[in-house]
Image (cartoon, rainbow, N blue to C red):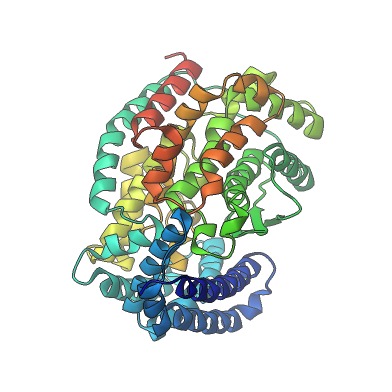
Length: 492
C-alpha cells in the first residue's frame, strides 16, 4: 500500500545522505585549495572511507521498501522518487569495494597529475591514469550490463544521453565550425591584449566581475586552484580561479564561468535543499549556465564595454584603445593549446577531440602508452599547430585524473543548451545590451534563475531546456549565434 509515512522516512534518510555527500565534497574542495601536499595519501583514505559510508546508505535495503511504498505528495515529490530510484538502481550495481577504491585512487591521482603537469612528464602520470581507466572500465561494466561502457559512464553526467546521439550532433556541428574557423583565420586578426597585470589586481577585478553577475558572497567565496572549478550547493557554493600575470582574461573569464556554475546551485529553490532535486539536473545543463554567463553575456559587446572601463581603472592605459578594440581582443580567434582559454569558435573542436580519445580509451582501442602520440597527432590535424609540451597537451585537464570519463561531451552540450537559452532570452527580454554596458546583468541572470536555475533537478535535462525555451534543444541557435557574431566582428 502507498503511504506518506514511507515518503517521509525515505526523504529523511536521503537528506542525511546528502549532508554526508556535502562533507565529502568539501574534502575535495580543501584538497584542491588548502590541503598540504603531504596529506594526499591520508586524504585518499579519508575519501575512501566517506565513499564507503555513502555507498552503504545509497544501497540500504530499506530504500527499495520505501520506494515501493511511498506515495508522492506532488509533482516535486514524484521527481524526488524518480531521482532516488535512479541513483539506487545505479548504486546497487557497483560493489562497495570498487566504489571505495575508485574514491581512494582518484583522490591520490589528482596530486600525481598536478606534479606531472608541472614537470611536463607524462610518464610520471601514465601508470596512475592506467589504473584510473581500469577501475572506471570495471565500474562501467557493472553499470552497462552488457551494453556500451562509455554510455554507462556518460549517463552519470547527462542522464539518457548516448555517445551515438552526441556523436551525430558533433558530426552536424563540425562542418559549420570548421568553415567558420577557416574564414575567420583568413581575415585580419585584431590586436590582442598585452602587458603585465599583477595578481592582486586581477583577483580584485575578478571579484568585481563576479559581483556584477550577482554572485552571493555571503554563501560563496573565491580561491586559487590549478584548474578552476566550483564546489558545493545549497547555502555553500564556492569557486576557484587561476592567475597568469600576462593573461588576465584567463582569470576573469574562468571566474565568470565558475560563477555561472555556482549561481545555479545557489539559486535552486530552497525547498529542494539536501535532496536529489537540490542539484543542477545534469552537467550539460550546468554547463549551459556557466557558458552563457561567460560567453553570450560576458564576452558580449555590451559587457566588454563595461569591463574595458574597469580594466583601465584597475591597471591603467591598455595597449588596445577603446571598448570596440577591447571587445575584439576579448574575442580574438586563434588556434591555442588550452581548452579553457579557447575562443568560442575553437572551443567545441577541443571537446570533440577529447570525446573521441576517451571513447577509444574506454573501449580499449587506445592504450595509455599511445595516448600522448594520439593526442598530438589529432591536435595537429584539427588545429594546425604542433603541441610543444605535455602541459599544453594531454596533461592540461584534470578530468581524467579524477575519473571523469564521459564528462567532456557535456561541455559542448552545455554550449548547445546555452545557444538555445540565449535565443529565447533575447526574444523575451528587450534592451539587454544597454544593461550590459552598465555592468548590469540582473535582468539576464534573473531570467536564467526563473526559467532554469530555481528548478534544480525537477525536470529531466532536455525537458529543463525545452521548458525554458519553448522549443526542443538543438545545435542550430548556437551555430547561428557564432556565425553572426564572428562574421560581424571579422567583417566577413
